[in-house]
Image (cartoon, rainbow, N blue to C red):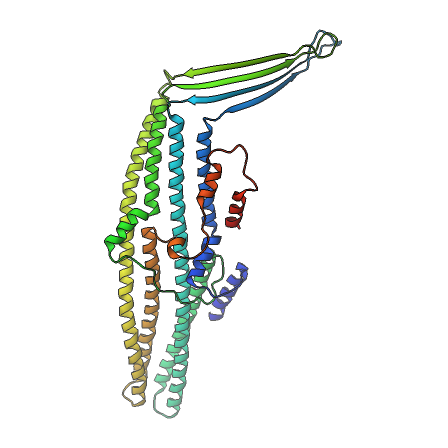
Length: 460
């Protein structure tokens, strides 16, 4: 079993195709932030939402269309009276007034951008928390494997010592069998932890994208609020899920304005130029015709079959939904902080208890080993004390991993699990770069610009 799990870990490393190297928690977070496909996907979604602002602003920009036309006609026998006609037309239109509908749509799109940026921040926190969890699980399993391995070596020494004492007639065959039984049990436990390590390593590769190697011990916990009330206050201000819900309310408010404005009047300017040429009677082009036109068009909907009114009612219902969703998000934020706070408190209290338990179990085991030499303890007593020590060490390792995850989960619940707050010291994705390039609806794509460099950096 042990060889099988080790082979599984080796297979994971081969499939990942990345060098094995020791990583700290900071290394893990940096690697995840820079290479996560989940984050790259979320950034691409934000860029799509950015373009909606350009689309809405483009509504009040000129629309120009060029049309060319060539008509060739012929009759049987080549009737010279049939004429070919060539024409070229350029027409344009410009919306100058629409009762504020475009302005409302632009503001709604801007609110959608702000909401999606908050969604991106929430995704970043979720990905970073997944990286912390993956790191903690691998480090825990590596520690468990180490403890289990030490336990096996201790029991191997115990088996040797018991066999020696059996040869001297100090213990019975039952004591030898008990020692061998506990050794086999310890070896099975070690194999189980090897399997858990292989699984957590695979999870780490999925989240982070690299093989963890022998992880370095986690750093001290990040600074956290002193009270639950302070943590909730921070979350109500910083939680990106809550921020997204607030901007969604803003967007829905502007959607209502746009729907109402659609029932108002609108004014457009239009113009056109047409050039037409026809052949003369001698077969050559005859005199051409040039036509130009300019017009003003005003319209106001009178009867729309109820469609515009239905649109207003639908937008108002969507606004009501967004407001209720905001209330739900606020409750979820408070609950998330309270839950994370409680989990952290439980983990820290458990650590204190497990540290004392491990210390006491260690003293008891050492004392038991000495007492068995004096005949005051049996082999079974010592084996039981050894098992108590092993269980205490396993519990302590588990509780320390729970504390690490709980602390960073609390940061995420408050909206502070970010590259900037953690001081990871790496460049971060700046959504303003792309937005500033496209918000005014450029007429051509911005290939070869800073956008390409931005995409290249965060898409590899």
